[in-house]
Length: 414
Image (cartoon, rainbow, N blue to C red; front, top):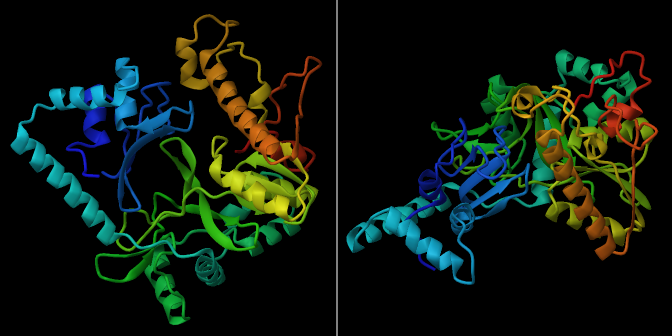
């Protein structure tokens, strides 16, 4: 199929969608045109893994589709031929004759080809595991990051175990030298997410000042180290976590959005919660097996993990997403700048309602997957009042399990 003579970037511009700082021409975040989220939860992707995709997805409200879906939805175009109508209307708004059409189409195809030439084929999990294990030997967990884990309520032995699993600090100063040492030790860095070839032709690790923090390892059900999230020291576009990725860099690639297993892969019961770090912390304290899902709306990878675990004897799944799922919707001017548009104190807060519905959607999807796989599924809930609603003291399952730690300050640390 030939490329269309425009991308989702041009469509977004026609629709007045506001682009947020950061990202690049192939993937960037926008103010969601459906729910208005400004935190970078809505992503526009032009090219993925060297292929034109022109899609969008909001991880807050769940809106998603391709560039024709975007145009049709925001312009109220419905019916069986809605995409054809959207396509012709976009061309009308981007006035072009045949020569202009062909020139635009050629540029889009050239862009796709250049991207394909630049990217590396993702390495398999075995090679990633080999490289990441060697990389862990060259990194340490810094004192400030150990303090962060202590602040969360972890004990010294728990921190040591997490460090041995790959919770290490990033090191932008040694990004080239570490890559060089890995190559010298026999590692093949090609296609391993987080590694790329820099302008000088040298392999480098994608550690920078803007993604400085500590690594949160993603372990597969087979015990392979497949990816990392980075818990940022300083939030970026209101995000506390980013993937350790070299997507769109020379010979680099993306890790995708895998889920992580903390605990026994042969367990008959597993808890599912949102967050790689949250799952590991709670496993360390309780000994229960946890799946850390990087996003409550991340269905595909979660289902694959559950399928694998069922083959190893899994029978029961416990949904343990954050207690926002049971929060009250009364506005008490406690939801940041969003409170400026809520109305009067005591009325229903639309932002809280959005948040609660988003988490509930993720919970419902988990229940549907479990029903499909014939796995029993129950809900974990905590910190509730007499009416079964959240009391807003302990948000995450990790906060609840660590609440009695001597130095735990009672704050919800996501």
